[in-house]
Structure formats: structure tokens, C-alpha cells
Image (spheres, rainbow, N blue to C red):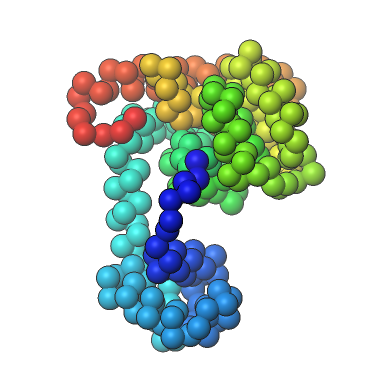
Length: 261
């Protein structure tokens, strides 16, 4: 949920520069200043500060993201118990389905991939650990929103909107809430080309002590994700995997301290 508290403009600018470097896969000073509509001197000062602190690297005249972010990302992921107990079950599900299997969490109203495993027939997709996606466009997102309080879902929609990713994306609030009600009844969610054209997905939430911890999803081409395999068998396998992870999370807390669920 967005806060009305004031933000520090200099910090906002640094983050804008970091995001722009990632989106553009590296850029020069002039290109960045033009893209961000900022004075070159301002961008230069921020880049030099980031470079001095090892968050940005410079090769010739091009700046890019430094590997120090990898260290921070691994730390953030490993702080979650889910990232420690979930992967073995994700690997098993990938072997069972031969498709792409994902372990995700919700953070700041978006879905975040924290682990993925390719089955033998998995297709290449645009996702990777750390990628953030609008919840309403994906099976995982709808699966977790179905178990959130209605006011929390409203807050997420108010913050991020319901942007259209494909012609199949749900962009109407009432339609989304109607689908969330169905998802609560069946305990799993479908994505039929709602985020990526040609891609279908099934997901189930991971819930412990009435807390939504994350979710499991299986993605694949719609040519294979159809019929009873898509509507019945996959949901059964995914929910079974989610249940095993829930049990492991419950008992894993006794062995590992100082981590988040």
C-alpha cells in the first residue's frame, strides 16, 4: 500500500537511474539524462556516487548495474524460509509435469518470482528470479488475492491499477472480484493468456497459520495446457505440492531462526 509520507527526492532519483540502467541494459550519461529528462550534471553525480559504492560499474562510456545487487538479492531471498524449503518440491513438480514451475511471493502488491525450475519440455519465458509482475495478470496473483481481505485487494488495485497485458487480461474490478470468489471455492487459479499470449498457467497459494506465504504455479504453452490435464490433473499436483511446502514451513521454523516466512 502506498504511503502519503514524503520521500527524499535524491533517493528517488538514484532509484530512477538504477531502474533505467536495468531497462536499457546499460547506458551512457547523455542517453540516461535524455531518457530521464534530468540535467547531465545531476545524473553524473548520482552515477559517480553509485559507482563509488559499487552498485554501478562503468565500461568505457557505458554505465551498468553492478554485481553488488546480486549479493543483496540473494540476501533478500534467503531471508525467507520459503526460499529454503520450497525449491526441492518445485524441482519434483517440474519432473512430474515437464513444464516450467515457479515459486512466488507477493510484495508491495506485485508477484515476485523467487525460484524457478524447468521441466524437460519447458518453454523459455520472460521471467527470472526477482522479476515483479502485476498480480491481476497471473494465476499466482489471483490465487493469493482470493485469500486477501477485500480491502487489501482494493488497495492493490488503487495503487497499481488493472493495466492490460493482453486482450485476455482482466481489467474490470467487478469481474476480478467475481473470479476471486470462484478461485476461493476451487482453491486454485487459472491464467489463460492473461499475461503472455500463448501461455497458460495454473497456481495455488501457500498458506500457513492463515497467512499467505506465497504460491506455486506451472506455466506452459496453451497447446499443451488444455483439457483435463490443465483443469484437473495440474491443479491436483500443484495443490499437493503447495500442501507439502506448507507442512515443511510449519515444522521448518523450529530448525531455522531469524528468517521470514
